[in-house]
Image 1 (spheres, rainbow, N blue to C red):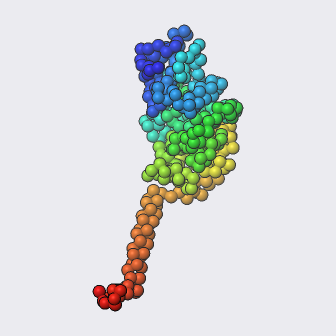
Image 2: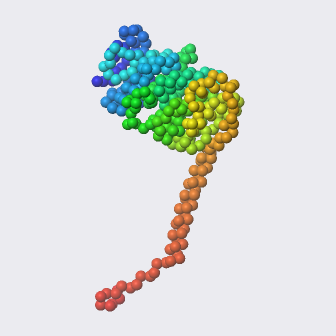
Image 3: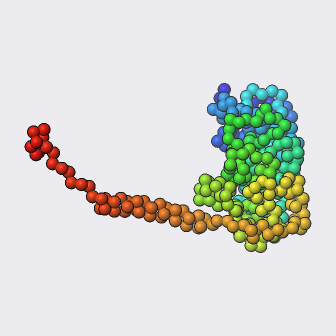
Length: 338
C-alpha cells in the first residue's frame, strides 16, 4: 500500500485537493462518486497504519462521531466499503476559529458569546451521549460563512458507553497544553468538566486576546495550571463586563468541583449573562506574574551559588584550622633513616 495523492480515486471518493496536513494524516477534499456530495477524507500516513495504538485511536474517533448527530458537530460519511484506513466526513466550507481569533483580537464580546454558546450546546448534547472531547481548541473548530461552528477531531475523546475502546496504552495527559485542564496535566483522564475548562480558556482568549497562564516554557505554564491562580481577564481587558469575567473564571477553576457542574448550567449563563451573580472571584485571585517568577528563579539560583561558596569557604577554614601533620621520616628495616 502507498500514499495517495490528488487525482486518485479511493473507493468511491475521487480526491480533488489537499485541505490540510498534520504530523499524522492528510485531509483531502473529495467527491463522492455515488452521491455527488463533496466530502473531506482524513487519511493517516502509511507509517501509522500498522501502529496498533494509532489504529485504535483512529477507529474510536470514527465510531464516536458516527453516533453523534448535532448541528455543531461534524458528521461522518459512511462508504459502501473501505480498502484502507481513513475517515470520510462532511466537507465544511469555512475557516478555523483560530483564524478568526487571529484577525479579531480581542473579539467583540457578543460575537465571542455566540461562538461559546454553540460550543456549549454541542457539549450539552455530547456529554448527554457519554462523550467527553478532551481536546477542545480553536484549531479543532470550523466556522462556516453563515457563522455555524462545527467541532471536529475526536481522536482522544472519552466514550463512556464504549469502554472497550478506551485505550490505556497512551497517557491520559494527551491534549493541547494551552487548553488542557489541570486534572489532565496531573495525568487523570478527566470528565465533562474537563471540556468546560477548555471552553472557559477559549472564551477567555476570545475576550482578551491572551491566555489565563503565560509561562516562558510549556512546563512552567502546565505547572502553573496546577499550582497557581490565573490572571483575571479584566487585567487584559479592563472594560470587560464583570458578569462575563465571572462566567470565565468559574469555568476555569483549578478544582473541577468548583467549576460549572454541567455544560447545561454554563449554557444558561452564556445565554443570559445578566442573570449571573458576581461573587468577586477576580478579586480573590493571586496570580504570580512572569516578572515575579523570574525574580524567584533568580533568588533560587543566587541562593544555590551562595550555599556553594559557603561550603568551599568552610572547607578552606577546616583545612587551616586542622593542618595535616608533617610526615615522619621512613626508616629501613635496619633502622637507618631514609
